[in-house]
Length: 266
Ligand code: C2E
Ligand code: CA
Ligand code: CA
Image (cartoon, rainbow, N blue to C red; front, top):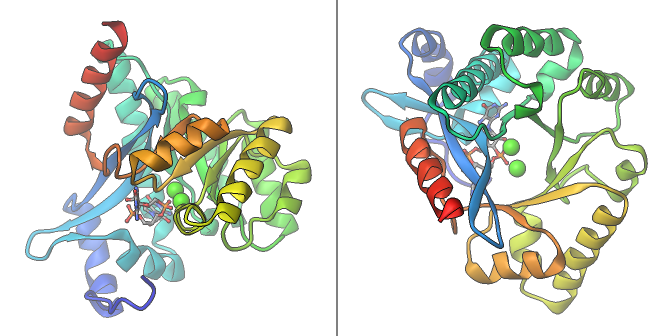
C-alpha cells in the first residue's frame, strides 16, 4: 500500500481543501461493527470521504497525511465529529437504538487540551449520551504530554479505543496502565498472522490476555467468515470489515441498522 503512486498530489490537495470543506465535499461514511455470534450491528466507525465533483471519491490515505502535515486535519476531524454527534441525535429522534459511533482523533489534536472541550460542546449541542461518541486514537511513541491529553479525555468520561493495536508503536508494555477501554486489533497484524499456526496462537493469546486484564476487544479488517469464526472462538466477539460491510453513506447505514434491529427482534 505504501508503494502506491499517489494520484492526487500535495499541491492539488492543498489548493482545493478549503473550498472543498465549504462546498460540502467531505462526507462522513459509517462502517458498521458487528457482534459475531448473532451478526447484529453494535456500533460504527466514522470515516471521512472527499467527493470531488470531477475526480470522484478521493480516499483518506491520499489526503489525511497531507492534512496532518499542514494542520488541516484538525478541521476535518472536528467536522466529522459534528457529523457523528448529529447522526446519533438523528437515531434517537427516529427511535432507532442509539449505537456508539467512534471517531478518529488525529495526533495533531493531542498536543493541546482544547479538543476535549470541543467534544464536550458537541455533546451539549446535540444533547447525546457521551458514551456514544467514542474516540479512536493511534498509539505513537511514548510521550508524556500526549498521554496526559489521552488521560484528560478519559477523565471526562469518553470511551477510548486504541486504534491499530499490534502494529507500529503500540506494544504490550503500554497495556500495563492504559486509559484505553477497547483494543482494536489491527488488520495487518490479523490477516498476515492468521496464515500460520504460530500467528493464530499469538492472536488467541493476545485476546485471552486482554480480556484477562479487563480490556474489551474488536478486530478490524475482517474479510472472511473463517476469520470471524476464529475470532469468536478465541473470545473476541466484535468485528469490523469487508466481510460484513464496507464504509457506507449514512442513509445506507440507516437501512442496515433497521434490518439489524428487525433480525434481532424476530
Ligand atoms: P483506520 O482508522 O485504521 O480505518 C480503517 C480503514 O480500514 C478504513 O480505511 C476502512 O475503510 C478500511 N477497512 C475496513 N474494513 C476493511 C477490510 O476488511 N479490509 C481492508 N483491507 N480494509 C478495511 P479508510 O476509510 O480508507 O481510511 C484510512 C485511514 O485514514 C484510517 O485508517 C484513518 O487513519 C484515516 N482516517 C479516515 N477518516 C479519518 C478522519 O475523519 N480523521 C482522521 N484523523 N483520520 C481519518
Ligand atoms: Ca480508526
Ligand atoms: Ca485502524
